[in-house]
Length: 298
Image (tube, rainbow, N blue to C red; front, side, top):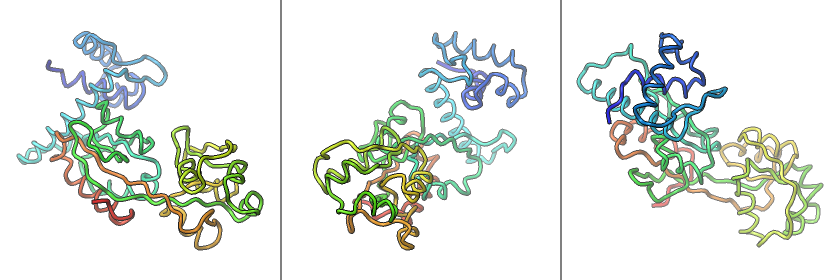
């Protein structure tokens, strides 16, 4: 099945910008033209591609078709560059990547510097779930904790992001005056990034066995705010060392248990079809990870 490039561009713009009106403005056409292009594309594939909401959202078919269009655009751009026929006026090619929040806030952004001709679209999800975006064909690459390659993908070990269980001195005095143990951990408030975040529970199970109760949890879905909440005494939490080492050194945060880090191995998985085109990005990701993470396994 062949698709009209103008129709694909209209679909991609709607999902990226959230409305038919914004897509029309970005592409320099009327809103009616955008509607007609999407309608024609939906008729061709026999499925609804856009949920007409505010903002507009893509259906599963719409998201997959957009990802396909962006992958094709990336390969076409590379061919044009290889032939010396790149056309700057066509604008940057979008590259969609799934990445966990802690990597994004500590080391990953540095890897995106200097890739002219690419416009990055980052999807933030837990490292245990970011590979799902690859399986659904919704991203071109992902930072994940899955060592086994997703079908059709290449995988590169990056190293481990080291976490430490820490809290403010005042929090430690209030909740752990009698020591850190299963009983006190069952009462002390704990930080949690979101409902998918099981780092705190895993650390407790590793060092203290099965919890004897369910402590109150504060959900803070931002890595920097999570660390700030820990420092302000909201709860104890597992924080990435690159983010909190200064606070630990200055005594603004203290370890719950010395010499008890939790290392999370991370991997870069990239679509095998796009791997040659994205090779410079892959190398940059590996280089930046090498300077921020613990040594990769194997």
